[in-house]
Image (cartoon, rainbow, N blue to C red; front, side, top):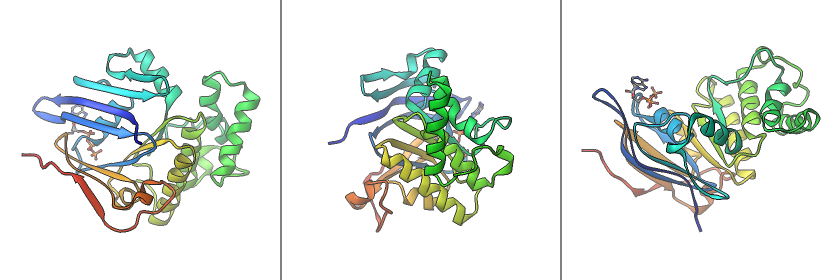
Length: 254
Ligand SMILES: Nc1ncnc2c1ncn2[C@@H]1O[C@H](COP(=O)(O)OP(=O)(O)OP(=O)(O)O)[C@@H](O)[C@H]1O
């Protein structure tokens, strides 16, 4: 049985005549891996930021369905949204969002300490995540001493460390070569699936989308295609997707 995790109702965001989001409706289910694709300017990042409570769109509603029921994100204050993000969401962005003056382990431990975990426990958990992601022995390095792929693994460790229900990723492999990109993507998919968490990933890369259980395509702020992997196994994030996609609903924008 599927449960909703994130829900957008009639979301709109206009910049003058430009529609970043145009009356968009969407439900993302718990444990689902969802790729958001579309041409440049189609609204992908605007949608991600709305679902994650980073921005509140001009119109419409956003709900996070957590363990304690539905929370209306669109009516929250900036402080409430910051708390929601810290408690329930993890972020992997291309730019990294990490602090260059801190070491690798300090960067990963930081969200735990911000959540009230004591320093020793936070460092222990952070180190375990670094090991899990193949970064053992690198905790004391600065970010500038890592390769692009290693830096993205640190970003994944930091996103996962608090055990969030949802991981949001925006072009997580955008700056990497194809081999490193595939490895980083695998690490992201596996570490999210292991915890039964939901993954929402904005990408231009069809290889990334092909590994997700569901692909949503946007154009001019609207969903123009929404397809799920053909077999049920592919809905498991651990299993590479095989075969063609089955289009479950396809609405072409007028
Ligand atoms: N702050 C802003 N002011 C004006 N227009 C904006 C602003 N933010 C976004 N837009 C416009 O909204 C539309 C959607 O932007 P968005 O960044 O969501 O697209 P995207 O699909 O993520 O693009 P890309 O793939 O290039 O990152 C674009 O036309 C963009 O120019």
